[in-house]
Every structure is written in C-alpha cells, then in structure tokens.
Image 1 (cartoon, rainbow, N blue to C red):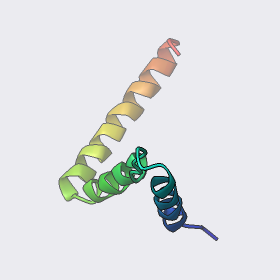
Image 2: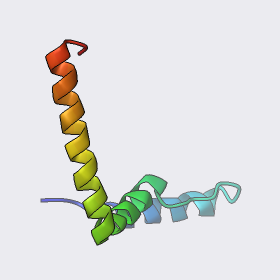
Image 3: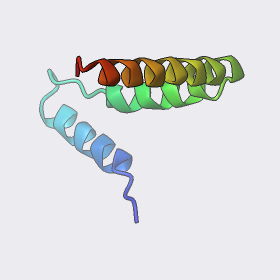
Image 4: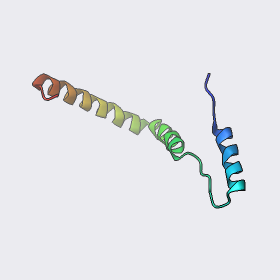
Length: 70
C-alpha cells in the first residue's frame, strides 16, 4: 500500500504560512521534476535514445572490466 502525502504536506504548509507569514511553502521540486521526466521519457525519440545509450554503456562497462581498469 502506498500513501500519497501531498495533501498532508499542503495542509502543513498552509498551517505554517498562517502562523508565520514570512515563510512561503512551495511544493516539492524533486517530485515535480520526477513527474516531468517520466512524461518526457514516454516520448518515442527519448526512449530510442535511452536504449542506444544503455547499449553503449553496457559495451563500455564490459570492455573496461575485461581490461582490468575497474
């Protein structure tokens, strides 16, 4: 079971801003960026680029392990 704490965080932010007007609450930037990146990752050309990058990284990792650098 997952719990979405967005409502709780927003409610707490509202309470803090009510008691301390100089403090401004903003939503979690990390969460917002995560959602944006997930949407971008759904684009076909991005998926293709990620697959190609993974192939390159796998190739490089295998080559460097065989040589003994890692």
